[in-house]
Length: 290
Image: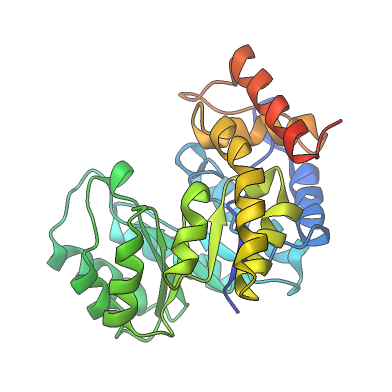
């Protein structure tokens, strides 16, 4: 169920407010282009600057727009366990297929605290993906802790942003082959899947969903030669999107294609002119912009 190319969907704004029409249109476009799932209100969806009401509304709109055609993994992370429980319960209530819960940032809990955090979320009875991103949260769910989490019924997988390919193999050994490992890093998704991953929760898929889906399909089919060709083709776009924070680059690329405005909320700012030029050049390189 959970595999392939799943865009970490941007959240469109219009004059500082949620642009619900653009959000619905983005969902339709993503499904038409072959994306295997939708992941709203993650970091790329600007969850840190959304109110609780906005966060919940985005999840509701996306679930309704998807209408069961592909899985929806709703962002539901917080460094406050009680708040994360609230968000997971809401995602379950409105029909999301799973929740994506980032490791508690800033607090710097121990491995024991991390286990207890996710064990409490397990009680919500909605499938949960652990979002392990040490570069942002300053903590790392170690493979040994992940193996204990994998024993919990509703901890079904991980979105891994460590870019450590050997970790994928180690976690397969510790957590079992049914534990779903999704890459969080577009540039290293090829190696991630080669080590046993089954997909990517992707930033680049906001801009090039068809190519990212084709890339994942090739790997899932074992066509590594085709996957390598697509990896080489997409790499300049990965690089350009991440010149500035990835969601800024993704939103600009989406705006160039006419699907949403490039607006972001402070403390982030819109892409610089030189970044925009680089993104447009990369979009032409992959053939999605004339």
